[in-house]
Length: 269
Image 1: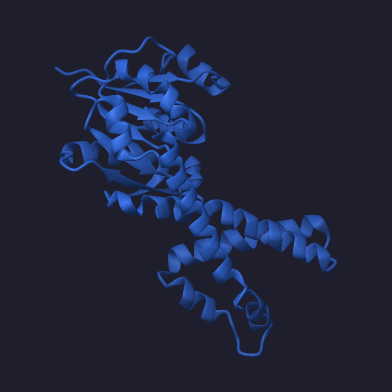
Image 2: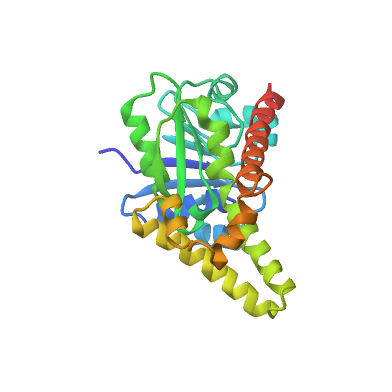
């Protein structure tokens, strides 16, 4: 009888840690091996309790998950090869590292590229996958199952879309955080106490996102529903939606983030 699936996780930061937490909470028995040069107290506790191995010697595993910063991948790729055998599936959550670059440096065609986002830390994220041509359905399903702890999984999609995916959903939470921050600052400038301004901004962003999730209506329809002609919301949107306003700024922001993803790919060459 086959033993539990073996998974090596390289890098246990926000996303890597969230994945490991989900695997440990799942019903499927898993042999988890975590490599992190500066393990958190949580990782050390897992190791002490026998839930995971911490910084073990490498040997081929069923699944290798690479969750390090893309800038360090070129110099560490050789050290990842001992984890890879003929039956190993590689899952990368590094921005900007293309499938071909992964395959060439790691010496395997069984590769899935993933762009998750930070709400995955609370199981409310979205992960978009892209895979090398010819990858089996079984490997795609394995990747999807292992990513489920982070939230919804979409794909595989054509890799040409990944820079824009990165700019939209990968970087997107920061845009919402900035919105809440800017709303707070603007309300303070109008005389609202700082604590009240921060609380109202946060709850407004949270509540609007929850409404959008549950209503089933498009963002545009929801915006129009709350905008009375000649009212206060319309006065604000006349500013936000003018020629130099939010739509144009977001187009520029997403283009800049997508271009940076492409630059990271070129830097790895």
